[in-house]
Amino acid sequence: MKAKKLLFLLGVGATLLTSNVMADEANARAIMEKVDARDDGQTLEQEMLMVLIDKNGNERTRDLKSYGKDVGEDEYRTMFFKSPADVKNTAFLTYDYDDSAKDDDQWLYLPALKKVKRIPSTDKSSSFMGSDFSYFDMTDRDLENYDFKILKETEVRGHAAWMIESTPRNQKVIDESGYEKTIALVRKDNYVVVRAINFLTNGEKKYLDLKRIHEQNGIWLVDEMTMTTKKGTSTLHKTILTFDKIKLNGTIDDGVFTTRRLEKGL
Image 1 (cartoon, one colour):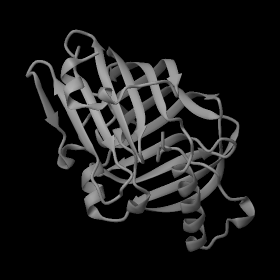
Image 2 (cartoon, one colour; image 1 turned 180 degrees about the vertical axis):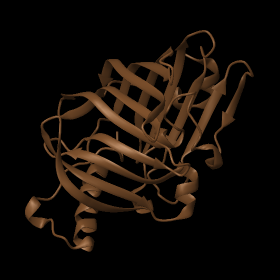
Image 3 (cartoon, rainbow, N blue to C red; image 1 turned 90 degrees about the vertical axis):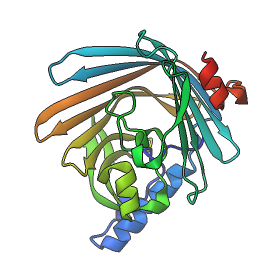
Image 4 (cartoon, rainbow, N blue to C red; image 1 turned 30 degrees about the vertical axis):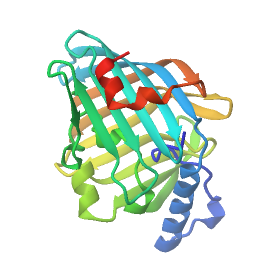
């Protein structure tokens, strides 16, 4: 599978970092270009547990099964909701195109309506199934739509890291994503974004944190991640995702990634 734009690979040494803004931008883009070429497997199958926590600490849980596969230069992903009853058999499909000139496609199957709904680009900043992740978060970010800058070098949980800022190049990207900018912390030893702050146009912030990751056959996979929405110091909502029964580079039929399969379910 092609590398996620939220993950960074192969940076440049500290000796290349200067106070010159253009040099910083060039180095940051070089990191991003390397992550774009990173091997993250051809297929990925896993169980997911989604925990939704409101501002009062009330929790709701959802069980999912997800599949991902490289199809040529593109990446397809499908999620099936298994429980609870109010979301059971809901399914989500994404076609993440490598061609930057082509908008990614997303579909949501709603069993109550027995209908597959295509997600328009105008709705991609909306919440995905009541979580802190948006539909936009469910696709990779196109490098050509952003300017990058290394802000500083720091540490995350004892690991050396870069702090990299990404800023949309046009209003269309801002409108679609709902983000004015993103600041990510990138570990230098494995080039994974372990934390990020997304600055929303409404003044709120979404904090991404990869709590646990592991390496499998040279590929880094996520075991637990959170997304927390805040306004000032107040937490408005939080989503915890944990991943289990991970199968990397197994056989997955292309039929899993069709709107017909969304209707059929698991």
